[in-house]
Length: 231
Image (cartoon, rainbow, N blue to C red; front, side, top):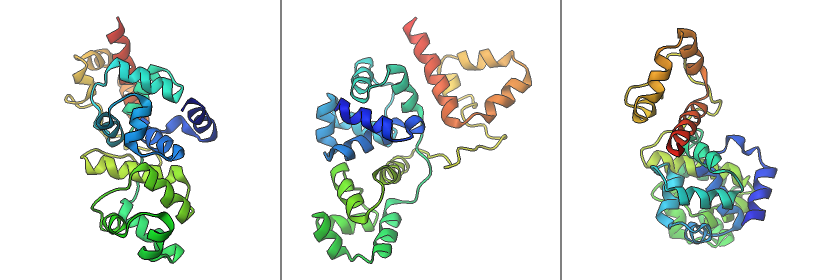
């Protein structure tokens, strides 16, 4: 586990990888299904799927420690990556149909070459279901696509299906965006700490905050919340 994770972190530009993508990609690299990967991590399969779909809420400290050990990173970095959102991507069903067209692969042939049942492929193409990590690896190999690129597509689809949001691929946000500054957002959920600290600052500080990458905003808040919890 740790050797694969270290190679992954070294071989990819992983600084901007949300935990969701990192976990899905690591399982793909190890050619295991998510349920087996969860056992390797020492966490529940449902918890792992919630991390991937962006539904994890206030994970236990022990869970964060287990993820940090498996991915060779600190608990604070795990928290920061949990807060990151995946970038925009096409729906997996659309992506798959496009790649099949490019490779001139019929569904029957793709089924033979990937050893994925025709029924499962039909559901993927129709947008009804998404492949598990081991099936995703076989698809990536047969379609000759980068595994990390496919992981990004699939995680983005998982997040959107579960009511979450993705961010633009260029990471830019409008200056007028109120994302993460709304009274109902993470700032207010931390007992007013964030809002109180910014309320007395000059307006240019607020302007600079608005220009931060959205993932940087949330990661900062999660980091502050973690420091407060440790006091």
